[in-house]
Length: 209
Image 1 (cartoon, rainbow, N blue to C red):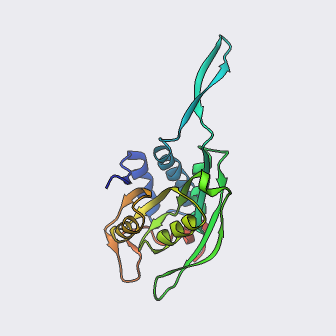
Image 2: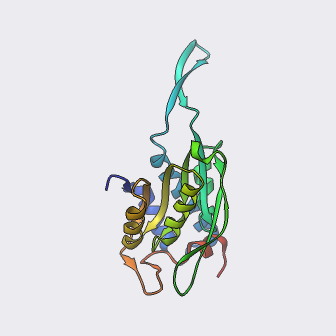
Image 3: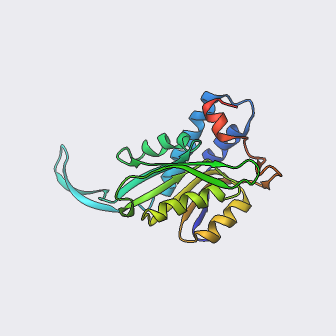
C-alpha cells in the first residue's frame, strides 16, 4: 500500500524495544516517546514544500531553500498522543497544535468524542495526527472523520505501534490518508490490546494506572 509507511530505521526499532520493556519507568518512557516521534516526523515531513529566499551569509548573498508558507497542524489524540507532540514541534516549532479527545468504551471498544479543537483554517494546513497506538482503528478513523468534517484535507497519521486489524480498517475507511507506523505487531487480544505491544501508552506516559 503506497500510503502506508512502516519505519525500518535501526534507532526507531531500538527505542521501541526499550518502550516495550515493562521495567522502563515513566520518565524514560516519556523521553523515548518524544524521540521516536521526532525520528518518525523526520520521515513523515520529507515532502514539506520548499521555496527559495535571499539570505546574506558572512561571505555573500545567495538564494537558499526554506520551508514554504504551507501551514502545519499537529493534532494529538488525547491523552496518549500528547506524549508525541514535543517530538514533532522540535522539528517544526511554528506548527499550530489542536486536540481531539476520545475515549474507548470498555465493552464495545467503540470510540466516543468528548473534545475537538483544531487550528483554523484547518483546510489550508497539513495535519499530523498523533496517537502512539493503532489498535482496532476505531479511534483513528473517528479522529480523521472529525478532521475531515471540519474541512481538513491533507492528513498524515503517526503511530508508534500498529496492529493489522487497525491498519486494515483505517486504510479501508480513509484510503487518502498517509500512515506512518513505527512497528507492526502481531495483532489484538480479546481485550483489543496490541500484542506484544507495550501496555497502555497513556498510563505509561503519565504514570497512571
